[in-house]
Amino acid sequence: SSSTVKQHHLNISTIHASKNHLFTTLDCQPHQNLKMAAYNGSKGIVAVGRSLAIRQIQRYHKPVPFILTSSQSTEAQTEKIKLPPNLKIDPRAINSKFSPFKKAQKILLRDEADNEEDLDDSDEEPEMEESDYDDTDIEEEDVDFFFETPIPAYTVPLPERLEVDIVKKSDFSTVVGKCTLPAMLFGQDPIRIDIVKRVVVYQRNKKRGKRTAKTKTISEVSGSGRKVRKQKGGGIARAGHSRPAHWRGGAKAHGPKGIIQDYTTKLNKHVRKLGLVHTLSQKLKEGNLIVVNDLMIESHKTKALSRSLLPILPDTRRSSLLMVDWASEDEAGVMGNLPVHLIVASGNIPRVKVLSQGWVNVYDLLKHEKCVITLSAIKALEERLDGVAY
Image (tube, rainbow, N blue to C red; front, side, top):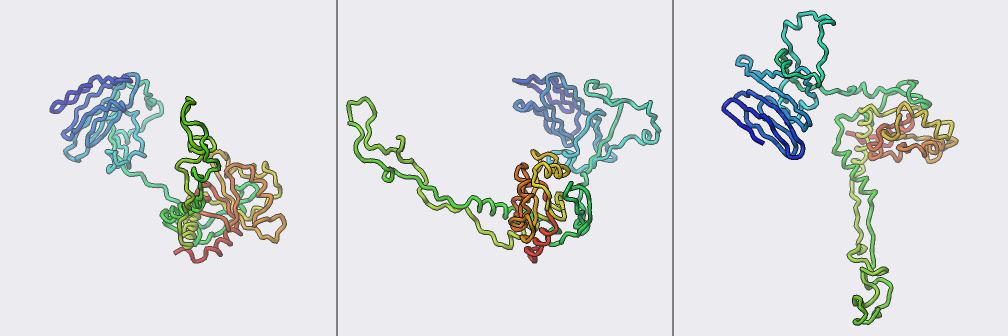
């Protein structure tokens, strides 16, 4: 590749890549802040580094026309870029540290005369497609671009967020009432991600447990020390006893020696409870918390439960659900504070897990996208975690 840089003019006519041919025409009249024009052959990208714009052209199999001109305004000290009307800049890239428009504002300004004129539908020009692109159309329309940081979408603020709907358990979409969730469990703001992370690490380490594996050495493997065959004359490798590591039934080379490896870590009970409180608050903040009266379903059939879960679980391959309940042991059809029909019906539905409030944990809440919780489980959690949050 070749490039010629003059005092105020840059002309890169034709660039050939080694593997994929790239034909790019780029004529640029840069201002005084022109710094760099380079070609990266490994990625097939032509980058023109300027204080105002960075344009990257990927590999194409056909010529790609691109003209970028700029003029400096002495009055407003702003840069104006003449860009084709079909060029759109993704607003998500504005906040990138590599974006030249990071500190600017995103406002599309046109001439005031064009705003005052009433354009009829018949006079409107159709949108230009990439196939109809022409270099002469760039000069016909002058568009000024200014960029601003997009305003983030905020959730429902507290305490209005604690006012939630109670839905019907038959379809999980019909609203049957309203309730106010306890602020201690669901009103934590901001969410302490550091505490939640510590609890997740604690749970995973506890599940890993201790490692007590041990393999037998040559002295421990069962077998005689008698010489297997004579030393010479057999045309085969010499051998002593029948317990070497490379023989079948022999010892294990460099295996674990039986030393107990404890992977569990310690975390205070108060911190573990605090992580659960912040995870529940995060579920409500995301809008993935669903409150029902109870989960005492009539049938143990999986088909009936899967149909009722369609509004909140349309595709079990991409979404998951955690159901939390706390039923009394005195009621009929209850085992382990959970309805028996619910346990049986949800057993064959993938990515659906049923837990009692005593077993609800941070890891399962984060692993499953949505959470269905009953009023009795919320009351039991409030009593169990009373005085945890600060």
